[in-house]
Structures are given as structure tokens and as C-alpha cells.
Image (cartoon, rainbow, N blue to C red; front, top):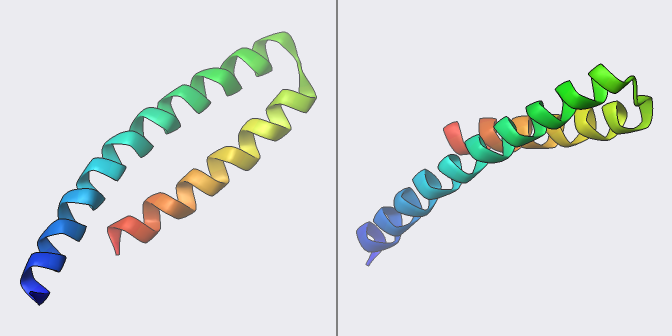
Length: 62
């Protein structure tokens, strides 16, 4: 049973990493747009979200 749970967690982890990668790409694009338009409020929000995504990415890689 333990091995089954580990396998499921590994598969879910790989799927979540794929989703995280897409979220990071989208948020980086949003940050780029905010920087281009000098929207400081949006820049701040993007940086906060990117930091959260970065921490989650690191957790999955452990």
C-alpha cells in the first residue's frame, strides 16, 4: 500500500510541476506587460505571486 501511495504522489507531483511551469510563464508575461506600462501595483502583485510559485516549485523538487 505504501508503494502505491508513493507512486500516486509522484504522478501528482509531476502534473503539478507542469501546471506550475505554465503558471510561472503566464505570471512572467503579466509582469513584463506591467513593467512595459509602468503599472507599479500590478508589478507588485506579480512579484508576490511569483515568489509564492517559486516556493511551491522548490517544495515539489525536494
